[in-house]
Length: 356
Image 1 (cartoon, helix red, strand yellow):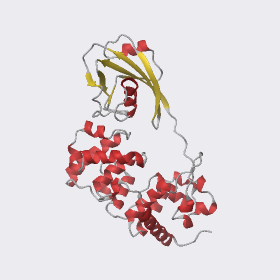
Image 2: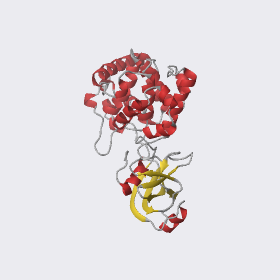
Image 3: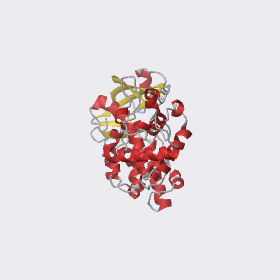
Image 4: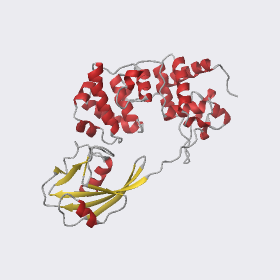
């Protein structure tokens, strides 16, 4: 049987245990040095739907390029997108850019501490606002992400908590109010879920209950059901789209075009790409290109998966004598905001491209 205690007292025990554990075991991550609202805003934007280890170097590079809110606010969007390279979900970069401009205009260049003010910033939702308010400004505010939700669900052996968001926020709020250092507890919950209280996976992955600082309070562990909580989420159905990327060369240059203002990878750059729900023939592609070419040579096929789409890239190579349009030297593509998938398509023809 697990120890029984009134909920506020139990929260204090758990909060104290989290604080002690995090003080000893927290990972050395760059945004944890010299805490600031701006660094937290950048790191939280980057960490959404992305693994921590993939964010470390992009975060450092981004902070070198834009060391202050003012520097980011004054930057050109294309530069911001280029510095976001490799992280995906480029809408987050645009939201972050817009948030920096609003912080300069409305808050004198200082990231606000109040939840309401934080929520008024583009791209800042309930979780990000709570994380910044607690971790940076020490406020007793909850912050619930997938890792935190899993930890809380296992603590109370709550099978349906994966979809019961308000329940998780209520429990996290109780811990925040009980904590001596709310920011430490908020971050400790995230860290615990990422490093110890991990998802159970068919390939053998399992939570490390033997080293968990909350094991003695964990109802799922006492009942032996930790691997069953939370219930696995249904996999999203993906629609299939064919992207025919045509690498058009003229000497040592390649032709590029900018994507539309809306939709996937909006306003980013790519080689000429014709999208279709089915694979197109070379003759159809030739007629769809904006410059005249004689023939196409098929070079590669690969898949790129997003949350809702299966993108099948068909990569072709051709040459032209036409000069109209945007042309770039094959060795001068680093500064362009371009998706990893399109960089990979280019690499199939011209060799490695920065970011692939």
